[in-house]
Structure formats: C-alpha cells, structure tokens
Image (cartoon, rainbow, N blue to C red; front, side):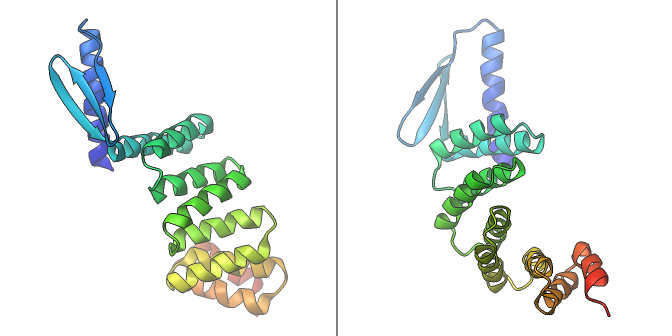
Length: 198
C-alpha cells in the first residue's frame, strides 16, 4: 500500500502546488474505471482501486487515532470505489469493533467473508464480535473454522480456550490454551498456568 500512498501524496502535492501558486483550480473528471486530475494541460489518471486504497490507508490511520467518525467516512468512500475489496470491509469491521459498535462490525465482517469465505483471520475476528453480541455458539463455530483453515493460528486457539474457560469447561478449554501457548501466545501461557496446571 506504500505505493498508493506515494501516488496519493503526489496528487495532493500537485493540487496544493497549483492552488498556492495561484494557478487555475485543477479539473477532476471521473469515468467508470478511473479518476482524472487535469492541471495546466497535464492529465494524471488514478484507477478506482488506487483511490480506494489511498482512502483505506487514511481510514486505518484515523481509526488507530480513535477518530472513528472520520475513519468510517474514509472506509465508506473507499467502498464506493472498490466494494469488492475484502480488506476494506475487514478493516472497517475492526474499526467498528474498536468503537464497540459490534452489530455494524458484524455486518462488515460478514461482507468481508462473502468476498473471502476461507480467511482464518476474518473468521476469528467475527467470532470475537459474536462473543460481544452474546452469540457464543456462533463464535465457537467461527473459531473452530478458523483453526481448521490455519492450524498454526494462535489467536483462534486462544479465543476458543477462553470461551470454554468462561463456561468452566476446563477439559475443553485447557488444550486450546496449550496449543495457543505452543504457537507463541504469552496470554495463553499465563491463563494456562493460572487455570490448567495441576
């Protein structure tokens, strides 16, 4: 995505330069597949995908700063130009999850999974969202499927272990924590030491 950030900054620089220099306002035109920036007789083309990825970068940065409303505007703008990009839906879901808007986060993860149904990371994150919505059975299904798709994914093992520990099913939960620990999860190691070691 760094390549697209460079394009974004070039476009921003060109517009700023011409405006500050008192030149004519740049002309923007849009076609079915591209956006064109025309300044002083020169034309710069950006595909809709490039525009979407530029906005995705902005959205992620805003979300990391907890500027959720601005981030969500950027996500929606990006989706306008590339609605078939699962990364935009997934990252929007993460932002909504951090904002504690779990129902809308679930919708974004569902949209991402329609585009990429066998993604262990998205399934795991949807499982965490389902837990927040008190849909434990559905969350267990997502964590289990995540592990089936990526047998080395410690987060899914950890989350499945925690679900079972919270229902006092140590017989099921402890082996999942042990697996997560094996794949490098320090949190799993701590929980395993606290609840599973005899």
